[in-house]
Length: 420
Image 1 (cartoon, rainbow, N blue to C red):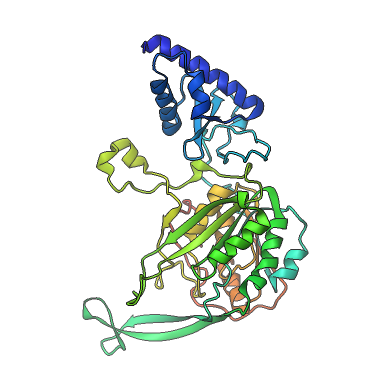
Image 2 (tube, rainbow, N blue to C red):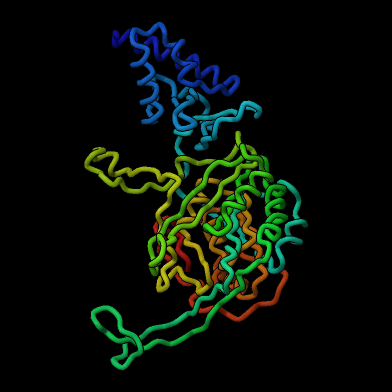
């Protein structure tokens, strides 16, 4: 096709589609676009240019192109759209029954650093269900919970200190011997006769407490996640299910009678499947597996993760460790906070444990409410949040926990926001 004539025709076409997008938030499938491209000498080549513009993020003439639903629907936005309407949010296309939201271009620059002022943390000690029912409906932008996994056993962690000693009780790297000193231990029972009966009213409260544009994340393992998903489908509606995220790690012993289970599952539901927060430009980049195949520029930028997240667990000897059983790494929770909320938003975790979600939220300028009834969890959080704007209510201070509140060098945290 003629280069100059075709470019002008295609640019004019996508500019008109951008006008339609602004007026009624239309999404255009490829079947919709092909008749509109009939004037082109090579409609397939014109459609390929639209696909490429959506993939690269570069405007096609004066129009941004965004692909949704795995590239089967396209949204067009003029580069002259006022900057405040081009927020770094990309939202899933609505179901036919849902009202279509206004969809700005997700290619506008997004803030790379958190709010200058860290967020506030409120810790509430007690049974989470009566606390949840006391909150006003629709008051949280993001809820993440990591409830007990119903493993049927006590979850325990012993905290130790090792020192070089030629007569020590353990052997380390290069045959060096170390003396072990036990500092303490933490534990909680993880057994429920009817797990879903325990979980259901709390999930119903999570749905009630979310704002219309809010998101809910449930973190479980293979034992209960399939039953929990059916329950969430009933509470939120199947159309509100957005992603099943697999967090994979590679640490610890190996099974000899089955494939070793080395992943957790995080279910993401949106209160409204057509309108939720997804800050694409806040996604951290990961290296390409074959950087030589993508070129130097892409290799340097890295790629965005998929729904399978590789991230190490909290190292037993690392500075991030609080000593609390089942502590989740800041890197995983920081990703959720940055992508699914904005500075100033209000977040909630009602199975707070060691408070990792609270730290991730506060460091990025979000206000976080944390609830837990375990006195050891409250003690850990008192130490951990000593340098934060944190308040505690509903419980007495418990014994201090070893290694709480030390510095962390998590690569996903911003510079200047290390724990003091």
